[in-house]
Length: 398
Image 1 (cartoon, rainbow, N blue to C red):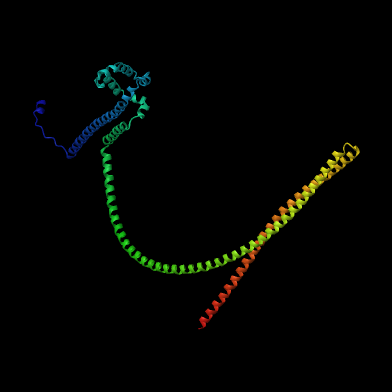
Image 2: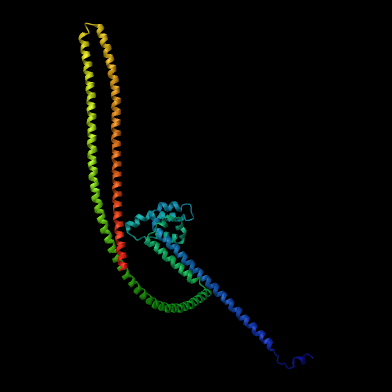
């Protein structure tokens, strides 16, 4: 039974089209999955490379910063030791001390600093520990203009590299779409600009015609305005001549009035001088009376001196007479001073009243004279107007 089955002929297996389609689909899915995995592996490798490049560039900038301030730090080793002491970078202090001990020898031998092994170790140490520059902000702020330019150039290089390395295909496609959209908008804008230019040319032509018409209209009005100005100038000149004549007549009248006022002033001055003389005469008489009394007093004193030894009683009487006379004299002097104050007050008030009265008379005279002049010119003007109206009426009748 078994031998018959083994020796039996095999028949070909038939595969349906649906099964074939499923197999092909599975193969395509497997290929896509393999491609996706390869792409993920490539992208991860690319990202790693980009990160490495960016890290190298940033590290280069930091090393440039420490390289720029390293000579300044070595110029002041005491400050460098104070700052690094107690930090994780304290190992650099011993290197700097070793170099400072050998610096005189290097200077005597005139060796370049880079030929010294200790200087190379210092540079290498500070390059590896580039974050030391953060401990010296004042030194970083005192960089020269060229050093700042160098740092700025490195930072610009870093920014440009990051911009180029971190861009993706999606962002580039988006940029291209935006550029295409901007191109289409630019084309539509050019078309609208050309249309507006055509409209502007037509408007310029119409504006030129309008401006030409306005210029002709303005020239006409300029001519009319010039003619009217000439007429106004003629009228103004005539009015100026009339006013000058009136001013001359007024000036003449003013001079006459001034002469009259001067005469009145002379008259008032003479009267004032006359009254002043009278007052002086009265004052002289009062002084003479005073002198007379003084002489009488002196005579009484002389008589008293001569007869003092003879008659004591007469002496007392004369003393009483003297006291009485002195009392009268004092009363007279009090009266005299009061009269003198009243006299001075009266003289001042009189002068002030005379001056005010004189000013009032002058103002009244000027107002009356001006009123007469105005009435005179008014009658003359009305008379001229009547004559002019009569001439106009006669002309109309003819």
